[in-house]
Image (cartoon, rainbow, N blue to C red; front, side, top):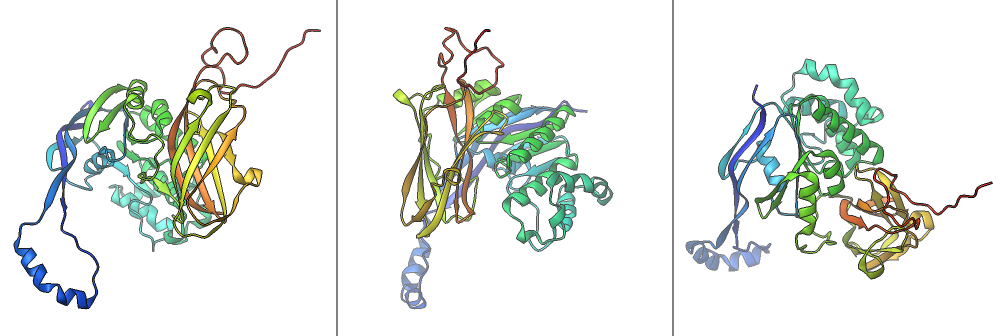
Length: 408
């Protein structure tokens, strides 16, 4: 058996973008403008070719967990879609040595009119599984997804979280040799993320292969043995995940707090989170010092009533460490009629030095409006908090707390 799971040679993907406008028109405008359109049709169409992937060559060994990181538009999702045969490359080739399971977006391969039970068999069939194999793992899939109560409910009534839990359960439990995941853990709660990370670790230990796209750099560092950094469709860096993440963070950021362009988000869209700022004394966030977070939002269907906001700080494995919510302090915005900013102040940051993930969340009257996981990476700098005159030993818990000892 080949030691390689994936071989990519000179891979490229181009899209042709037309610049001919096609606005909506009334019937009267359509008839009056017909002569002009006939003349314009005789002229060459203005268009440009955009390469979202360009000359990508890479090899992934069997049993490897490869992280793929980069800015929005770097080509990460396009690469996985080519490997999943969702789209064809414009140049180069990709060879897959083994059966592929992919989860590229919420509800991939699901039909909204079918029940959860029927969608398990449908999704399994799409992944190339036989009916007997699906039946053998059926109970494990349902137990993992925790949707037994809604198993015979049409999927169109599922929340995005239920969609993701069931879709991930199918993809992970039907034993694909190569698993392709595109930011699929963002929708899950802390307990489900923990279970997913455990399953992914088990898949890797069993000798199978994972390609994992994520904006949550802390999870990439913790889960992936190796990573590549894509920038403008090309592989910029390749190496151990910690080194690749460090190089990514060292790049001149376009706008490190911008959230407007993020597509990996969930909610009904009545309000959108557009920017996150993290501020500490002197521009540095330190252990035991004050930390401030400014969350910018845009109301898309004002007026909105009873708007709540939340910011969570997560461990490198992706689990919640701290959760700050306006629900907890009864500070919900009673009425939102325009764009604005909410500010969270933590007088005493109880986190030790290190890198942490940030998730942001907004709800309108209890219904999720926007949820962005991996919105930013919080870098907490070392501080001589306990005054020992030396740095904190490695391996200690991530929290600090004021205390004192007395000897009797």
